[in-house]
Image (cartoon, rainbow, N blue to C red; front, top):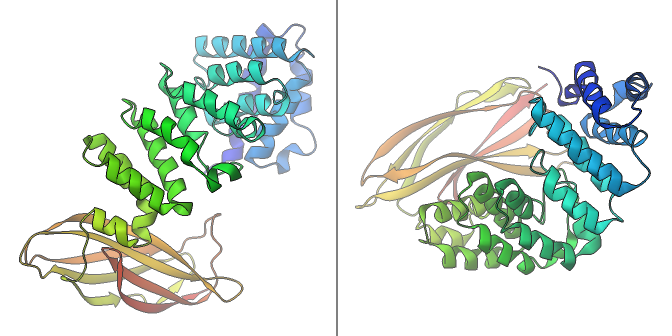
Amino acid sequence: MSALKDLYSPTFYNRLSAVLATIVPNFDQQRFITLIFDDQFEGMELKARMRHTARVMHQFMPENYAETVKLIEQLITRLRAEHFGEGSLEFIFLPDYLEVYGLEHYETSVKALEFVTQFVSCEFAVRPFLLKYGGQMLDQMYAWSLHENHKVRRLASEGSRPRLPWAMAVPALKKDPRPLLPLLENLKNDPSESVRRSVANSLNDIAKDHPDLVLEIAARWKGHSRETDAIIKHGCRTLLKQGHTEILKHYGLQSAEILLTALQISTPEVRIGDDLHFSMVVQNAAATAQTVRLEYAIYYPRKNGTASKKVFKISERTFLAGEKAVIQRRQSFRLITTRTFYAGLHGLSIIVNGEEKARLDFILTA
């Protein structure tokens, strides 16, 4: 499987340079390709190649930033005409260009972000503007939340998330996310699923620092529509994984009469690269049907000897009175870039409606 950085390939740059040559006056395709594939290119990862592409393109653009923005708009129009790159990850160098060279040109860049995000998302590029211009930029994002294009509306919610992954945080919004609430209110009934999911992601970010505020929102939005209920559920996923008492009450999740028995690990020793296999029996001992949210947690040892807990959802469904189910699952320990595995004692726990019901240990071997 190819690495993401390989999206920036000779084929991509050859095609891109051919389009640039039709837009940028006196554009030298061969020099562009030579500058791209310099001595450092092979060792660059995805974001480094993105930034490198923006910097190389800058060498061929006018000194006047406003003129460059006009050329970028023309470029996108031409790319669309050639059915090349709409929404493709490799074109994130265009928003990055606006971030690197447009931060001191607020008015021009705001219009450019609005245009470019309809071709490729500007959720990362908008962050420095939010940091530098604060309330002014937040007012703009509120205006974008009312935009006719759903990609611009999504930029308003996704770009303003307090903890957007892969992006710089916005400390002011982590400390006080209330300025975001009018924007999220505008979008909670959005016809676009991608926008609604973005609203949920923002709520989930807020919940990590201000759970009570998200609980207030959940209570206020509950029952408004099926779509809004889905936003709340997804936006409270971290609180649910944490077994937060109030959110469990919100969803009527009680664990006293949900029985967990026969927890067994069939692979008590697992090699790195293989799977952990386990099973259990879950029963609703209540006289009425109950919603059962079933999760498991893996306790991974860290290098310093402490453990990190990662929760994984198995299912959430209604169990009829007396209903019993045998559950079998496996957890992969194949090597991944986002986690380092350390051989030794690990833990597996089963969580029923937010309560850790049972735990067993197993050994991970190199």
